[in-house]
Image: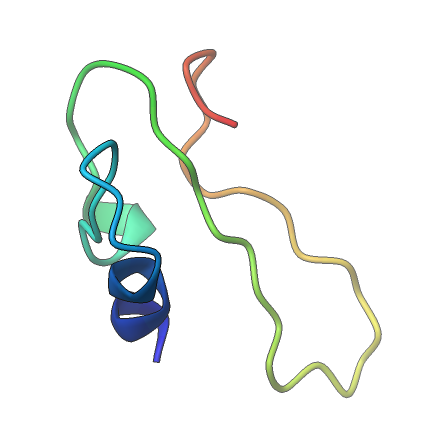
Length: 54
């Protein structure tokens, strides 16, 4: 679902790069933090912990 959502916007400025746990590239990035099944109510945080992210 998320790759399709990113592709829907048709921007050449960004593209889907897959699992954030495996992300290892330099430069700015946007990380989608989602909780589609969140019965415990905890807020999820980012996985990629670098200063370039938004």
